[in-house]
Length: 269
Ligand SMILES: Cc1cc2nc3c(=O)[nH]c(=O)nc-3n(C[C@H](O)[C@H](O)[C@H](O)COP(=O)(O)OP(=O)(O)OC[C@H]3O[C@@H](n4cnc5c(N)ncnc54)[C@H](O)[C@@H]3O)c2cc1C
Image 1 (cartoon, rainbow, N blue to C red):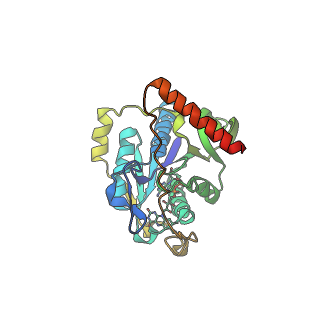
Image 2 (image 1 turned 120 degrees about the vertical axis):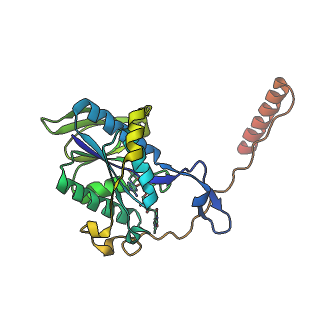
Image 3 (image 1 turned 120 degrees about the horizontal axis):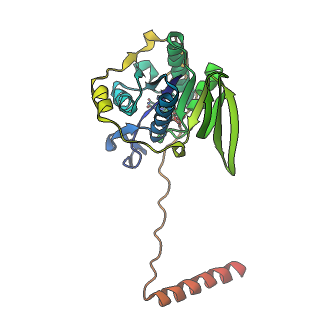
């Protein structure tokens, strides 16, 4: 069983600030991390590998610093890591990103068959959840989105059965391998990393490919290959602060009831 997980290096959005003058993200204000959804995807891939045998590879597209998240995945138990890094990739929207990643996956598949491709449900910076489905379309393989449980993987019959999250409940779906899944955080709990893996990761050198390593069409990547136009980026308006009710609990309750009744009366009139 060979599982390939797409992982993205993202700014920690709990720390990031907006530049109020330019209304753009101030990326220097936040440390970068492995996209949290992707961490759960790697955890799940390693769990399946430990049960069924095989290996886990990870693939990222980004600047050379993204090697850090690949090393993090090696710590978590992945065996191999690939980074697609080239100036011609920068400025890519989700359409171009899924094209570049699918070209990387095709190259890996040509060297070694891949049974399942995992992506996070979404990246916490772009938040579109489009890249996973985009890759599946380009590879021509089934896509299973919002996966919150992998019930069974049957290597003999070449099928997987999963639970996918819906608005009201879940759906149980069976698909043939190879397929692509986008993984929810609720699928598992992240476990502690053994010291042996940390040592492996510190020594590991990811495989880095640039444009000349991919048989890719330059017009389908970067700004040229990105039809999305970002017209404006702005922070949401700040919420007005709440009102603190003063006095004892009884007084506060009386005030609240009075305010609520007043609200209802003013709605009725
Ligand atoms: C016009 C335009 C220009 C842009 N220019 C840049 C730029 O120069 N630099 C830049 O960093 N971003 C740029 N972006 C943002 C970039 O398009 C998105 O970050 C990227 O396409 C991924 O989309 P997302 O973050 O919504 O991912 P989602 O679709 O929410 O991600 C879902 C999953 O796909 C996988 N995935 C997503 N991206 C990657 C990746 N890079 N490597 C591996 N796996 C991945 C992960 O498993 C992730 O969990 C630009 C966007 C636009 C519209």
